[in-house]
Image (tube, rainbow, N blue to C red; front, top):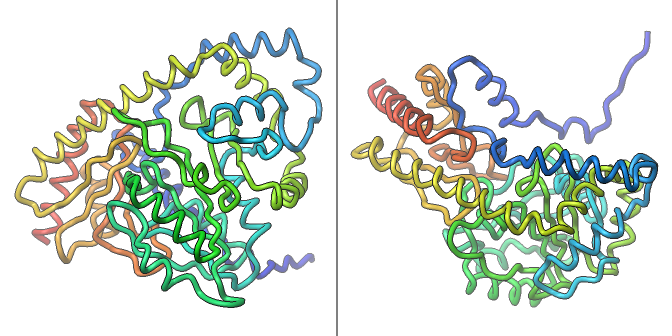
Length: 394
């Protein structure tokens, strides 16, 4: 009988808390604010049908064949042109979702025991991507403006223990929805450069602003000191599994080699469909419709919170874009304990503790406002308030 021996790194792999919670939300009647899914109302199905027909008619054989690991050249060129700094298409690597970008950077930059810095809190999927490489993940204090620069310097480490990079989401961050101010971005890039600290800038939500575009990316200010991750999941559809990274030429070859080993290349058929949409300017008209929808849903959730949470001692933020907002329960409450009571009332969320690399705040939780209707938001927030009252009375 065969004996399967797990690698040590396999013991570092854990199921996604969010994926486990999503199983609960499959129960009939549950209103879910838990998932990080874009609204399916935003998926341009008819435009995809037309793009698919065009790709198969004009370039079908190549679309269905193996292809270059770097990605489809016209897509790399369009990505380079779309970014607000001078980008050589040769520095653009098409990835199978931006999640793969996290995995590739981890493989190339992290050794066992390497120090990696993250915001407080941070994206759970990044912690999962880094974990198999067995780093020491260190949290940097963060406020509503972004990373605390003094604490960043304290957490940097020295010599062989110096941090390999800081992972940061400046725009409408997952999980908090916060955005880094212009002043903090400029100061962060300056301080990181002085420390010799590379930055990994993850920007899947940057196009989802409500009224005003966010400030310039960190990478635009110091391209040689940053790796930039982008995605088509939030502006087109996550089922495409297409993202990209932009990296300095000094490190790009190793990221490309990691990509080749991982999956040879991202789907050429999907890449050509995105090119067909981008070439005709489709995104220029499509993305504003997503912004409008998400803004209205965010406003509905903020209004419902103000109405239903009055007098409960609950705090929340008001994001300027993205898909999430961040809630803090009253002193002494635990979001993990609240969740089953909320599900009993017909609503689900993600407890915030999962998003902390260390020293989690048990009072926090994440709400996604983009997949529920306005009526469901109103009903769900009312149910959440009832669950909070029930836990307070227990």
